[in-house]
Amino acid sequence: MLKVKNWWKPFIASGVGLLVFTYLYYSESNVWPSLREELELFGFCLLTANISFVCIHLMGKKLNHRFPWGNHLTSRLLLGLFSDLMISFFWIVVILLCYEIMVKSHFNINEFIIIYQQAATKLLVVSLLIFFMYEILSLSLYSYQQYAEGQIESVKLKRQQLELQIEVLKSQLSPHYLFNCLNTISSLVDKDADLAEEFIRRLSYTYQYILETNQKGLVKLSDEMEFLKSYNFLLKVRYANSIDLTIDLSENAINSHIPPLSIQMLMENAVKHNEISERQPLNFKVYSTQDSIVVSNNRNANQPKTDSIQIGLKNIQNRYAFYSKKAVKIIQGESFEVSLPIINEPQIQEAVN
Image (cartoon, rainbow, N blue to C red; front, top):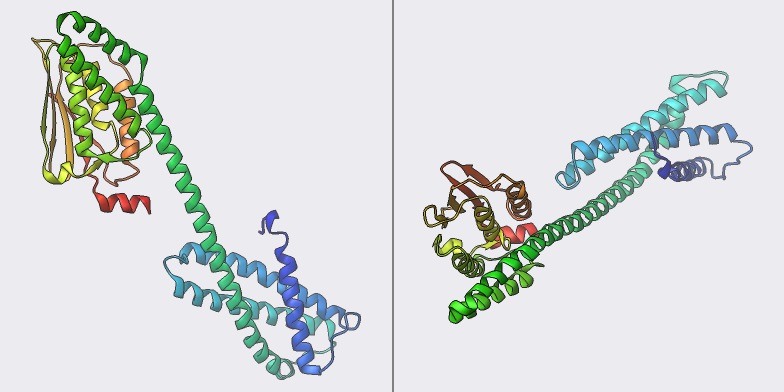
């Protein structure tokens, strides 16, 4: 059935039907049809046009589903033209037969064929032109709809990505993190002024990096590693060198890209969920395989479980989904490992397009 928003389409179908009828009538009799004298024929013409349009419209939907324009352009066009002609001619013949039987006192099939044979030939040519224009219009509307849907989806994805990045920014600029850093600086000022100065410099760099990358979807892994080293320095000072960071990345990996702060979030989660002491140090490793960047840490779990690790992992997984078809893998055993797919330039271009 036609939707309410398509109320205008029956008027278009009726108008086209009347124009075709007028053309055929004039070409056969050389006079214009009179509405008063040919009222029944006009009525049957409108009925034919609207029934044909409804059937063609429904068949077009099925063809769009089975043979989308984007994947089957030629097949969809030819099938559309063929089905349009078959449907319209079927209903024209059926309704003309009804007209002949109901309006005229006698009916002869041979006379029926002779009378309408020439008109049918003209109708075939006119119908081909009309239905070709109809299918081209359908293609244009379909293309516009696909483009509009693509634009809307792109805006939605960008909004989702921005929301995820804002979540990361909020977590990294938390008052709790800053409070811990200030306490560390306060304790260092009298003990080791040079170390306090270096701590402040590294802290300033981490905040600068966080603010500079909060609007970026991806950053170079080499830049992320420099940031991670500074973040690790802050942790080593706070935990008295009970944290160790090992980095072993191939040239292919170091030149790849990564959602900003992804590895730092994993390191932060490891700190939150593990005991860190001289007796139980936290060993954090970042290394590459052929197609992944693996981030792992040993497990010294003795802290209460929280949902923060799941929230952080979900954030990373969602951000990676924008740029890679490969999923972020999580392996839990003696160590906690997260495998991040390597994102190279071709994947970025594909995601953007």
